[in-house]
Image (tube, rainbow, N blue to C red):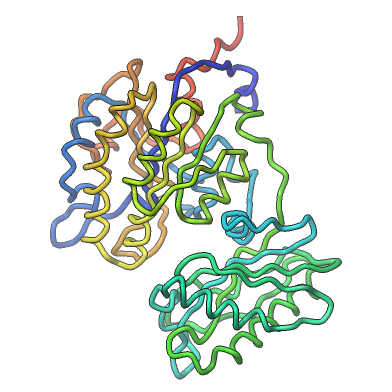
Length: 398
């Protein structure tokens, strides 16, 4: 992969990465089928018959990826080399620009039961208006020696940014990422981070006191403490003019971090595809993000995730009408509804172009992709394959 940038050439060909967040699943015991296998998706199945299929390993066998490493691999960045915390991604995604010394954390409003254990990690997925009200409340917290910013993101999500001298981001999460457990203390993961850990725990304690009277969102969970990293852009590495079409802030932040132009769009795939068509002439790589499948999976809503996949299938002809030179359909990770969270299972992958060798398997699903010619490959290999099929790579060696 280190040799790849030297092989890239600019061409007018266009690549679309249609990313269905949390796409992969595991079979439902009643039907023996995953969400993707259960969905009625004639367009995706027909496209699969003309494509090369496989399964993607986002990070490595048995490793459950977060959203950042799941996306970084697909963008051509080694997720084991570039480890970026969620906090700074959320901040960038809402157009908050952290300064070099700032430490940002992703926050969830959550619901604690009478014993102090987490009953709902997402506080019932609050409205955006309620999140903004609660963030205003938390903005009254004052911590000695630091400036504090508490900004709403979407639904139950918010960002907290600590600004001051000597802050460190090497901190553990307060979110156990499992319901039925109590929030945990933020701990320093490096000797110089003890003071920052105390500040984070002080913020959490003050937040709990302020939220005590709230019916649903009576506590906060923090994770992904991080600072702004320095990354080479996709334009520098791969000579692309990349654009991102994503409505959720974190994914906008991911795209900004690798130098994509983040295009304005509305909620839902129909708006995203309007944006895609309107900007088709300006870019040669498009990242189109569909969040709702992941949200349904995390909520344990098997049928809801099926419906999202069917909605994507219904919109797929609009993408094909633009005649992309390469179309990749995949996910960043698996989010089985039966597990209510991310998992380590390989992700279905489809690559369509005029130069691919079709597998002739007219079905897009986990087991069908497992029979594909590509087998199980790292997500890091997706971009080189897309570049090659788009005619953007020259020969290596004599």
